[in-house]
Image (cartoon, rainbow over all chains, first blue to last red; front, side, top):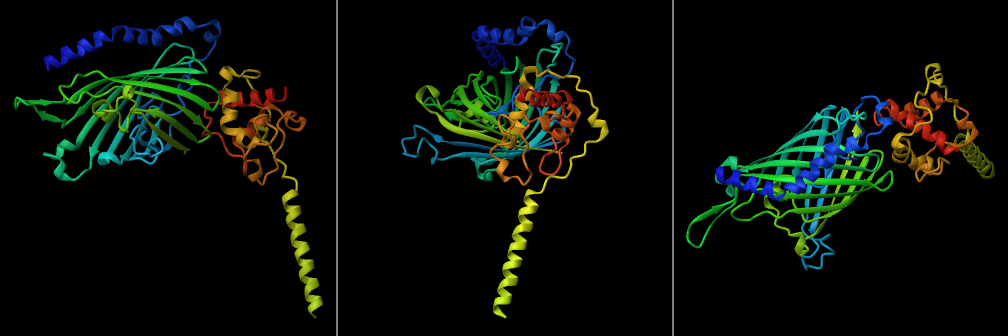
Length: 302
Length: 135
């Protein structure tokens, strides 16, 4: 435990400039950007910083309005560099998640989904802790996202039934900087009941950590009313003795219509649950392990 | 006998065709706007903060009403309802409250947007953008 803490402290220390820059950008800029006009605005919540609640394989800090039902299709094609002549991975092995979500209140979204790879059934909840206001009396939005994944593969794949479970917690700090630009930073903690372990040549054993910290940053830029450029970076902070997960880059566009949001992007994440990518992603973007993915969201208001 | 039957069939076909033509080109029923809406005051008149009205129009209205509001959107031809030019004097001559009622409450093929655009300020931004289209 102490060793893990020291590793985590070192990682954060190494990233200190980056973290300071992000925090400064989010917290300090409203003070700089504030003008006289804003003082007249009412203290209503700021308009959504992102078009959709989904952000590649993760979440934005956006919550849907009360009584909104959401259906989401998430698809990841095969690797572009597989060498199988499968049209940039489009006809390669894919991963798919279908999900349903609902907003019982303006501050709470809940839902569930099922993913093809590892047959993961997930349940999630998302709660608005703080909301950015138009008057800037609250300069940021803070959202807590939690999910639980249950792998439904055959029992022979697990020593104990509890080995199927994993948990993901994410605290998302988000700010809408104006009509065109929004950004967010998330700190996550993943827990897997069972992780990989390997016997070494000297017959000792090395395992991955059960708890993994991660950092993710993302931003969007609105090119037109309906076309949005989006980019994100996920960095696993925890150092594992084996199978160190690779960071990921996601770049794409979002097209928003009256009831749909279409996100098409390139990424080096093949998995769809964020915890899977933070702990198991072995696709290295620097080696060209890119793939195409998309998310389609359909919303109904009741 | 056969000639008489042919004449009846021809007459019936013409009658059905004429009726169908009349039905599709008949003017729409008058759209009565309740007095409450008619006299509604637009406290955000002239504003379009962060171009929200334009964004919402593009997101929700453009596909039928067209980018410039001429009623020539990609979905317009699929509708049975006659599309009006939003920049015309007939539309622009209505009060903000009347436009609000028709744009947000809707009827028949014109959807209701109360649940999609919940913030009253945002709704007025759409009306303001409709006004700006005519300028």
